[in-house]
Length: 220
Image (cartoon, rainbow, N blue to C red):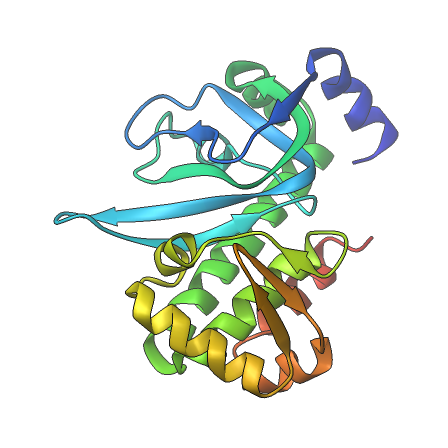
C-alpha cells in the first residue's frame, strides 16, 4: 500500500492471533472481517454435496481474505480457515469496503490481488484436471513454501487429502514418490522440503504461472 492508503486503513486494524483451523469465513454467512496475514497460511475450501471438499486457493503473507467484500458480495460459498497457525491484522468488513471506495489507488491494488487469486484458482483447476498427484503435491508444497519461513510444513495426511481432493492412501503414495526422489522427508505430521529446485521440476509446469502474474501485478 502507499503510505496514504495505509494511513486510511491503519486506525481500524486489530492485531489477532490465528490458531490452526480457526475459521475466517464460513460458507454462505456474512463476511465479518478482512484479514491481512503476517504469518501462517489460510486455505479456501470448496464443498460439494456428499461431503467432498477440495482446496481452491491459499493465502498467506502475500495477501488477504475478504475478497468477496471487494466484489460487492456479502457472503461467499466457500470456507476459509487457517491451515497453518499464525497472526495478522483484521479490519471490519464494512470499514474495508469504505476504504476501498474512498481511495482509487487502494481499490486498484486490492482488485489486482483479487485478479491474482482468480488466476491461482484457475491454475489449481488446471493442475487438478491434468497433473499427476505427485505433481500436484509438489506444486502445493512450493506454494506453501513461498508463504512461510523455513523448510518444514506441519500437516497430517488427512489434511493433505482435503487440500488435494483425494483419499488418504493417494496422499501416502505421492509422498513416497517425492521422498524416494530425495525431494522431501516425511515425519509424523510434518513434511520437510529438501530440494526446492527438484520440486519445481517435479511440478512439471503446474507451478509458476500464478506466481509470475502476482509478481507482475504486485511487485515487492
